[in-house]
Structures are given as structure tokens and as C-alpha cells.
Image 1 (cartoon, rainbow, N blue to C red):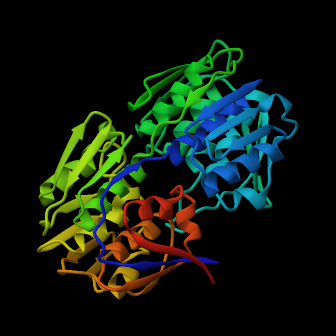
Image 2 (cartoon, one colour):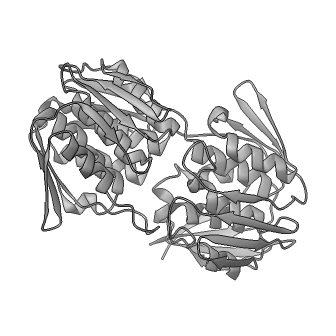
Image 3 (spheres, rainbow, N blue to C red):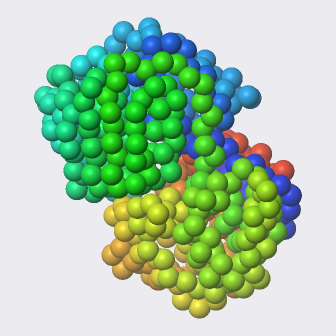
Length: 419
């Protein structure tokens, strides 16, 4: 099992480029199942989760090629001959469940194992299943599998919570109900949903309202292949901006989707940082001792839950007291005990963490409990005095492409080791 060895306290400098979006790429890959013919996707990040989705598509019978160095993936789903997504793959990645909508749309049946993923609390698929039932499918759960089948119909689907995955699955399921209109009320508004809709529309779908709380899908008979470029990863961009701030190192970040980072940038400016936009670059001028702030994570356009852990690492070195309330997932504080091992002063009370800033964190052996907690620990270790060892970096590999190479390019002292 790989680990990172990090020597903290080294100043960083240079330009770093944001990779393609993991949370956009995975649903787009699932949506290729709607199309018969070869699709070329660009800016596909070389991540563990992307490789897992590739294997899911191949298990279903699709032909997939991944040119990792060029970040290009081609998918031909005309050869799909199975509607069963096996437990061995789905258990490792929750996004595998996104194949249910397109399989149901195209073949009238889908059998998918109950999903796995990060241990950040329950994320039930009830919203997906309720929607499929309202659209006319028969849904059965047994022996760890979910089976949905039947001819779908249009109508109004109201989500009790603006679930990103449910919104995406409904969009894909409704896209091939020829002549019918499906409306999603209280839809999730994340930029990745807009990217999925843009890809589907490029292939001939008719999706409107993506990025708002009301999405309309006008069903069509079939979709055609179209090349597409995946949007940059706003969470990676936010993590790199926080890297600049926590190490007090002015950095230039290329291909960052500034328009999707409003909540983060507002809080970082409130801390005292200067962040400028220059053509396709973000220039970060970090303040030496940031001010503490109060944050509550919310669905987009609120402060993203995926940046809560990296932000906490940063606020651990801010002046005064900061408060972070987690309003999306109930168990997304796995990083707190590890940050405390590095000298942070954090008190957790239910869904709220109180952070009393210290002048500097100290290197220590720590363990990544999930993807974003791992990123938070990397940021903390790079800013800390002394050496740190981060175990279970396979979590980090799920969502950050070639992270250590990017950091080394900026001047960080980081090594990947086995054992």
C-alpha cells in the first residue's frame, strides 16, 4: 500500500495546470452507453475512479481505449451485450451506479450492485430508485443487487434533496423516451451536471435548464456520437488554490474554472488573500497570517463539501477561531483526528467543527480516511514544520491526477513509497 513522505515548510512557486474533472468525467462515461458508435473524449483525467469506470463499461461489452498520456478516451458502446454491473467493481466506486439510468433507457433493464465509495456517511440511492419508479420502471432489491426494468415514461420528478447523482441518472434515463418530456424539480445545480447536459446535447439529446433547479429533458429516438472535451476539475483547482494559501506561496494556476469557485474565493478573500484572474491563469497572492472565517457547506452554489477538508487544513493556521458546519454529509470529518496529530486545535460538536488557529502545524505520521481528507493532509504536511508520512494514498489517487508530480514541479519535497 503506497504512502507519501513529505518534507514540509518548503516554499513553492511556478505554474500548475488543472486536470479534467473527475465528477464530470464519470457521468459522461456512463452516458456513452446511450450512444451507438465511437465517441472521443478529451481531457479525461488518469484516475483510479476513471479506470474503474472504464472496466465497468468493458464488462458491459463496450470497447474502450484510454491514451493516458494524451488524456484521451474512446468509447464504442454499440457492442454492449450485458446490463449487469458486477459487485466487484461497483463496490469500489459509487459513481458506477450511474450506468443504471442509461442502461434502463437503452435496453429497458439494468442490474447494478448496491454502490460503495468513500466512508463519509450514508449516501442512499433512494432518490434514484424513487425517480425510476415514478418514470414507470419496476424496481426490486435483493441479494445486494438492484434490478430496474420496464418501459419508461415522461412526467414530473421531484427530488426531496438536490442529489447530483440522482439528477444525472434521471437526465440519462429520460433522454431516450422518444417524444416525452421529463421535468426534474429541485434538481442539483452543480457545474458537472451542466457538463453532462452539454455532452448529451452534443450527441443529439434535448436537455434544458441544467444548472438550475428545474431541468427539462425532451426525449429523442436515439443519440449520435460526438467528440467532447471534459471541463476542468473545480475541486482540484480549489485544492491547488488552497495549497498556495496554506504554504504562503504565490502560485499561478492554469485552466481553473474560476466561474465555478465563487464560494471558495469569497471566503479566501475574507481571510485576506488576493486572487486575480489573468486570461486563463489564476494568480494567488496569499496573506501571511489569514483571518479566521465561518463556513457552512451546502449544495452548489454554496461552499462545496469536497473542499471542506482542505479548507480546514488551511484554517488550522489562521488567526483566531474559525467554524465549519458540514451541511451535506454526516461523517465528513475523518481528517480532524489526523490534523490534531499535526498540532491543530479542533473541537468537533456534531456537524460543526471549531478551529482555533495555531502559528504552524507540525509534521507527523497520519492516515487518509477518504479522498478529500487525503488532500487535506497533503496540504497540511506541505505547510508543516518537519516531516510527515501519509498512509492510504490510494484514496488520493481516486481524485487527483499525478498529484505528486505536480507538487514536485512546484518545488515540493514529496515521495511516493511502498509499504
